Image (cartoon, rainbow, N blue to C red; front, side):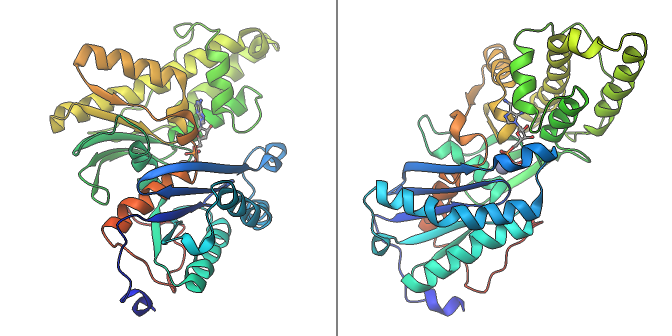
Length: 345
Ligand code: KG4
Ligand code: ZN
């Protein structure tokens, strides 16, 4: 049904609605002429009691939230649906049921308004969040993309050309944070809690075995096992070991994960001869990573790009800005596109 869009031409000033529903946040945002003017997020607290995202419950929450969230951004910006020029939505990767809610909603709206539909790759959108605020990077730049499902080092050549230089071969670093937090008895998602506790702890107190990987790849499953065995041993001789040392444990775990991330990032910058370095994705909200990146930037004369907190974790602002950049290139999708839970890069 791509023919529906053949007669459509991009406008000089475009109003793009962005919709994100890949995991456990239902979010909508408006981008007017390249400026993201709002970013409404409905988070799903329901998963906390299960220690992880329950896909079926996520779909139901998206179903409940999507109309109010979209209505909220339109009403508060005083934009009528008839003013919209394009609808950008997360096509993948993500949970199939969750993606289906956002994509069905976006498709119906685009079909009824006869405006272009712009499918967005969730991980590329995390990177393009750097084009929301100033200063913006110029191409090419390196981006360390760190989330609950991905850990990648990318060479970003343009809005739609990103080359994977290295990536995790097993767990994502966000998963490593969350699994380590679970071992410490913390609720899901544990990443932000480790960050908070680490601020009061000694990062050099405990050492955990890091997995060595070739080139620019990562492996984070070994460190989880190393933490597990270490805690088992200590708890055997002192059952209050975790609660007595929680800050030092959090700080040491965080320190190890950040060291692993930074070592390959520095190697990638040297290999590519690029000194514009960005971080993106949920784990880029981590204060230890943000601080370490600034320190290394000073030493190595890097220009670093660190997103505003609201654009680190899942949000539709990044989908709306990606929509704007791809609208400019007329990279429109079709009404019969289906969501891609494992969308290729
Ligand atoms: O990008 P994101 O919101 O969702 C995915 O696309 O996966 O990333 C979520 C991940 C979770 O693993 C969460 O624990 C982690 O990001 N995260 C953090 C922090 N904030 C979020 N990890 C460490 N420190 C934080 N401050
Ligand atoms: Zn994400």
